[in-house]
Image (cartoon, rainbow, N blue to C red; front, side):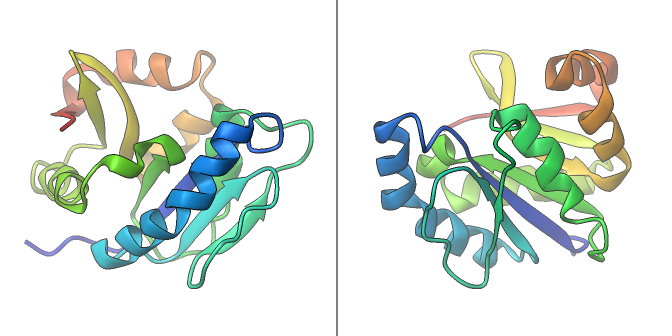
Length: 165
């Protein structure tokens, strides 16, 4: 199955206020970027605070000082794909560095095969990140009051839940 073009947004927030998160980014950001590229994502954008080293071909997007939480990072990060010819975005927080490329590829492929607007990792039945979201859903993700949990509730059976490794 051919997967349509998609982008990847890596969310790396809290780096300025949490040394452990900054260390996590230092140790794993390059691997996440490489994984996204191997999966076929283009463009790859890293939405961050702090000053992580963002390797090519990823593009760095420093968050405004007032918008440095994960939800704001996702909203502002998805806007970076406005002019990109992509039909979906893989949204990966820095904490998901341990997930394999095979897991992420399965999420992308299965959501595409089933024509579902959203795939989300599931841990003990609770849905969350990483996400694979169709472009048609980005507006809802960016504007719905209640954020991701509200969107997940509204979509119900149209969300592919993929049990995390």
